[in-house]
Length: 114
Length: 112
Image (cartoon, rainbow over all chains, first blue to last red; front, side):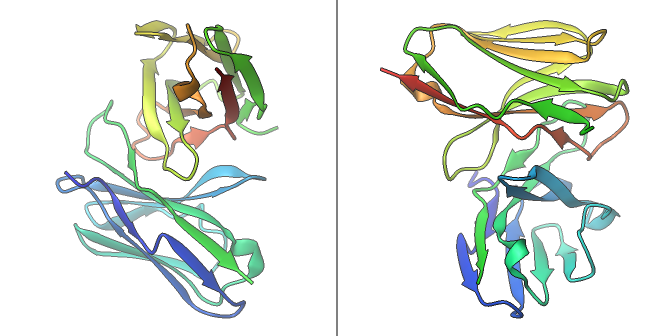
């Protein structure tokens, strides 16, 4: 299995531009998570889906952030408009149902907003 | 007070040393405790998983949970340069399928 796939791996954009991050979870996993990691705040959960349905988006910082999961094999995280404080590493993770099942993380997208 | 506190380090030890990494937490509802390892420019990967209190051993790694003190530890015996990474503790409540709360991570460097 290829693991969780994220694209792009690096993104540099200018303030005000729209940014779209993409994730392909591991096949058969029915939970998908989006995290943001910064030095100041560490790893924070933004939103998670179960069977393509958003369950908890309380971690989404503001309306500029939106996430979708149109099918079981694809999710996007969009920032519009982007701001320099959005610069971070964004991780996608997936897991199967069940109490002990671990989350598998993707390699992350390093976003820099100038 | 943050729900999970973890000393960010950095921590530098010689090869072969015993390493102790720790986290404290404030939410007594946490029941599942995890340690993730994150190499530079990579995503976190699960290292150890413990339910409720007690110890768990896996090779050179031992995880301990003391719920009465709200304190968890990860011990690494005979540390190796390949153990150099950032170690993040994580925890969640019973019945919470999604919401893992992470510590900020401790950066460990094992010198040959």
